[in-house]
Image (tube, rainbow, N blue to C red; front, top):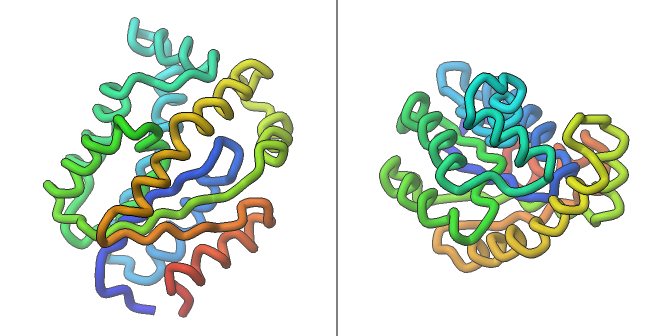
Length: 202
């Protein structure tokens, strides 16, 4: 496999659907394909948790509060984090893997601006289709500090109400393919589905 074009791939799925795990596995595959090509991996959830762990500034305290409540982080802060990462790391040949944005239809405009600026018109969306009962069980079992009963239910609510419409947007977007992946399978099976749908097998 020798990939000629840079991939831009957005991962969408409820918390607990395995987006972070699958990004890491896909990143490894892409890096092996061409070691000279950078794979830019931007996961806003991980960046927010890193800020919350510091709690040295007012902003970091607020991020921790929002995480513990299971609420969405403000749009401006999400855009600051992923926007700076793109400015610092993205070049014309880089693969770009995205998780954690856009989480609402309102966040799409800023990302579209960035895609236009960085000349990335073609997008693949990996939609990890995973029922609520499955991700609920996974979140309870992973024992993360912000996975309280209330925060889990709040995250599932805003995924239903705010993020599912984002998938509908990408279904209609030109030069975009939404790949529906069965997120109930085990990690390796989900990975195989992703490689197959993106034609990334050797």
